[in-house]
Length: 206
Image (cartoon, rainbow, N blue to C red; front, side, top):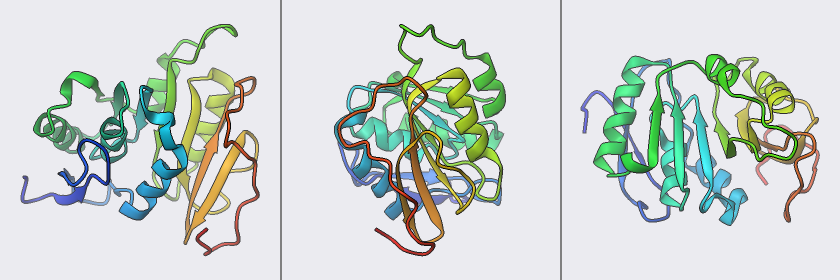
């Protein structure tokens, strides 16, 4: 393990308990373990067999957690050179490269390159996971792109309070100053367990 990197733990699944490196520095902010657990508790069995994309992948912790819990394949999108290097080393160490694809590009270019599926066609990804820079406009941009391009059947995004409106949101929870929102594109059928809920009061964990 790279001595210059922090260490994260995979929470559950076939890789549960294994540790991965996280690149250090201000450009990468790994999702806290408790919040990661909340993501996947909310997703439940929906990740098993899914085609997943991990946007702003960093260390790959979210996508690797999805692989550990049975995702068929994960595409990791990460533009940083050092983060991409650490991510690929993590995938190799865990022996999951055959179910992974690492794209060293920015999220904007990646989404623009995706063809919008026809109404009768499924989205290119079943689940999109996104932990964008905290104090950025990316949560709203991703929601707009989901509505326009239908790149995933479900978008799961971590964001700051007030960074994302209600349109398309089917599930939302607050964990301190971190908000998790799940969104579906227009016309995508809702699934059991989807339930629009107002954002809990700031600072409350539910």
